[in-house]
Image 1 (cartoon, rainbow, N blue to C red):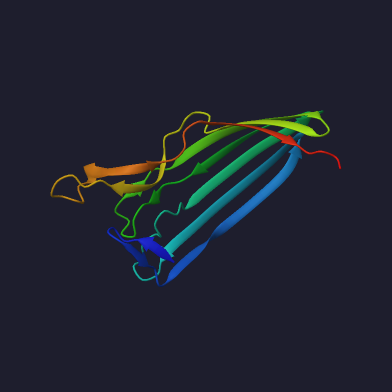
Image 2: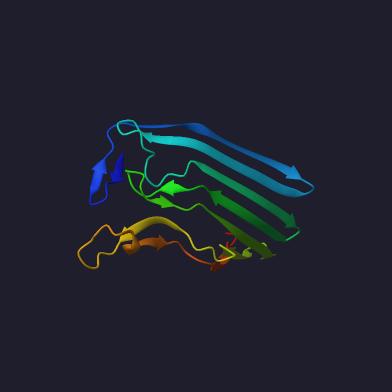
Amino acid sequence: MIAWGGTRMENVSHARINGFEASAARELLGWQASLGLSIIDPRDRDSGHVLARRAKRTLSVDLDRTFASLSVGAGWHISSTRYDNAANSRELSGYGVFDLRAAWQSHPELRWEAKVNNLFDRDYALATYDRPDGPNWFDPSRNYGYREAGRTLLFAMTWTPSL
């Protein structure tokens, strides 16, 4: 396993990830519901620190329904805090994003889809970088997050000709 050591990449010689992952799906009142949960303890066995950039808890909830030729759905994905470095001195905040999706089968060969990912334009980062400016490379005020995508709109048309 490879982790960021602050100034360069380093090998993690002994890693251990214990935990629990579960998922369930069920139809409820015409809606297809699914739930995914992960609770893990990712550790560097040599230092005892939590492995960098790994959330200990994640949760995903999805609901979808089809009405004749129209289908709609939503998803909520939550992640707990994580450490950005092997020393566990820089913590990244947890986050939650909400997505919406819809599709319309206008013809047996033609499907239209629309998605809005990160509907509420949540600002979050899964990793950081340092921008040195002056003599002190490790000044925390020079630490910036690699921003993840904000609100994203996706449109698609799928044509599947019958041959």
